[in-house]
Length: 135
Image 1 (tube, rainbow, N blue to C red):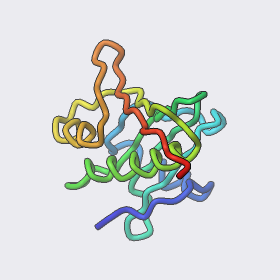
Image 2: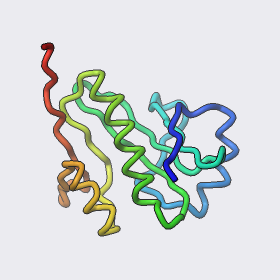
Image 3: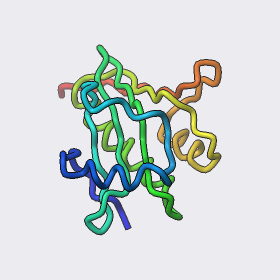
Image 4: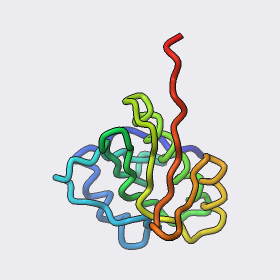
């Protein structure tokens, strides 16, 4: 069952508090006042995931992702990243960077399928965004 992804709302804060202790975490979520955009992933009207990201010049930065521990958590991460990537690409980013390299091999393979490359030394993953033609 796919996630329903939408903008994070103030009313999602309680759901995030319940989700966070047992969830898979990629990175540390910044403070709500950091200026990061947050998308919420819902399944059956319950918060199941969230992603924090922002623009930094021509780079889109994915700060953190939190997802519920389910059998399909890796695909939830990929759906959130795809949605954030679309939002960032529409705003002209040339690169999307994640501030962490997942340890899970299935997730890492899925991100490589999405054209992310790991930089183990820097502890980041990056994906170039193809230029869009005006035609």
